[in-house]
Length: 281
Ligand SMILES: C[S@@+](CC[C@H](N)C(=O)[O-])C[C@H]1O[C@@H](n2cnc3c(N)ncnc32)[C@H](O)[C@@H]1O
Image (cartoon, rainbow, N blue to C red; front, side):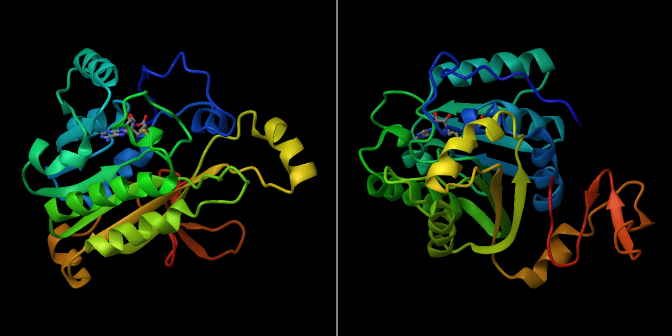
């Protein structure tokens, strides 16, 4: 699965603020290849998926296409309507619910095999003027209170011995310091009972970043950012992963000579699997 799905965001006409995800990547469409890997690597076959910040249609469409039962919640009705139209055009039927994920336990009652989402990065993209929208909270502390509550509720609905995955990027405060959103996310999951098991880097398209990053770097010593963090958490006993998930099936899995080191490197479909770290590029 290589292409991307068309996504209509309610904020398509919104003029993004400097440094927004759209500005950083040229798009905020979720990466469908990352999506497929997360489902195949970290969800049991035909498992159920809970997504508390559904956003665009990609995670829902890819899940349903691959045979997983997906429930995505988003505050934005226009976004959900657009998602449903796209899914219908493709011929799949994910479940999207319009609602405030602070009520996830009532809205999507049940137990799930994977929690998978891409949350608002505080106010980096502003999605609406709805006061329940996490991207319009008055300050970072207020945002974190709601964000931590949603993570805690979702992890309480995650079955034991299952994974959760959040894709996040750090954001700067008004003075220019990083808020440390990645660490705050890790802490929120840890406090909820799911511990950090993997971290991978999603390298995003540089696009116009080299041009936009020049002035902040030259005068302010700020490095441009062209990656996001793929955080994978696990709730339960890691010894049971082997039994519950089995071996990952990798088509055309062969040993290739690593051109740089001369060692054997295990490569499949362009994804190189290291022994200590996974790198999805
Ligand atoms: C980072 S976006 C996800 C977009 C993602 N990059 C994509 O296109 O797949 C986060 C989403 O969270 C939604 N959101 C914000 N506050 C929410 C809340 N309280 N409950 C549910 N969804 C919320 C926004 O409407 C937005 O669509």
